[in-house]
Length: 327
Image (cartoon, one colour):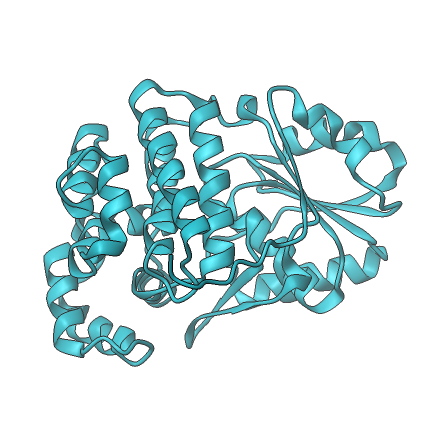
């Protein structure tokens, strides 16, 4: 067996039906700021209700890709309220906003995911400005507690379930070839892909959430690669929907990166190659398969390829061909 390094990240995970009812037991803070989208606020309030007057405020100006202006306002709100803990109830954008606060204020985050984004398991943060999307890694933004309750994702609209689960799958697929890949994370990645594919097939929120948890844990250890570089550029520069973009790009990057490292993914999908398995799955669950359908302007293809190539060792002609296929 080849030599490897595996670093387990700190954090506590609580998984199972009814887990959201334990939020008050998992929060040690006395001045809690609740973060949610306007649509998710009623659920967040219900989950936070046992905290009583320990909740000192709410922040609902959550936006996809975490614009810098939103991050600055969220930090200002946390300072104004003298918050000592953040309760993030929602998807990746909500958790990402909490991370933007903690990146500067070092506040503990308790995350209650309601989608399959996986951001709650990673020390990766991201913010978007007019110059594009900037990302980084810091243990200061890694949630201290993550509470997974399948009941909170069971009512997701089917279209969102599909794109969110494919987004999670992208974490695991990339995790087998990223710079930090190792035998332990590859085992987790294969199990994640099996769980996500099974969950999409039988609409099992429990399988999907389990797979998403593993996918986030894989990504947290291995780091990102070509797939995420492409998706971050497309999302940040052209305001494309995050999860759907991952869904479209994933099979194309898998085909480009095809090799022995991706064999566990192919096996998990019962396919000859990872790319063919991902394409078949996308077709079966009616996932988006073209950038054009997401609103990406064909005239920007060369520009996007240049932006990605500037952040990647992959030659620009290869990036251009990959994006053209995805278009």
